[in-house]
Length: 197
Image (cartoon, one colour):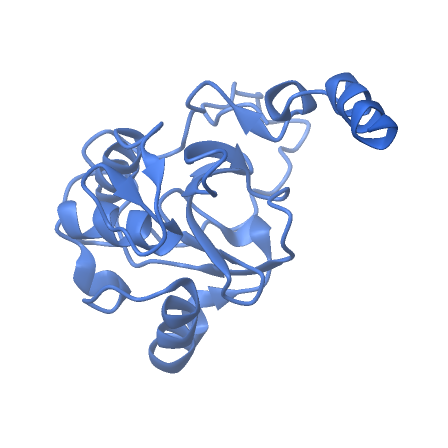
């Protein structure tokens, strides 16, 4: 009894996931224009915030992690960009590795809005929002939430770089940006339009 009481006291002293900084109650800004394919995927996923986590579910009111990914891409009309059928997280990772190996990165810094993220070698999946934030169906306790992409409790495995537009309507993918050279002293500095972070 004493152990249970002490455990409850200690747990009450720990910060909540939101105050600890790995869950968010707000939708973060992302770098994709409103009419882009990435924005469609993200807004469909966003509409599911707070829906229940149910193992094996793929919508419309309950999801598991890969079910949320499938639902967002299918309802955005982009299921063909991720293999055309519902798979588990490990199945998406395998499909990309077998069919689009150059679109699989082990570096979270390569993620762009709308890309699929994989953790735990295929035990969990989510959709990258931007600035190291993702949305996924976490578990029964947290349901569908926005969370840090680098703090899921499983090791980060891969970014599945989905071939979707991020700058406007249509099906032409946005190329991966190259590093911008530093301005020379003779050039005027211009303010950045990219989100802070």
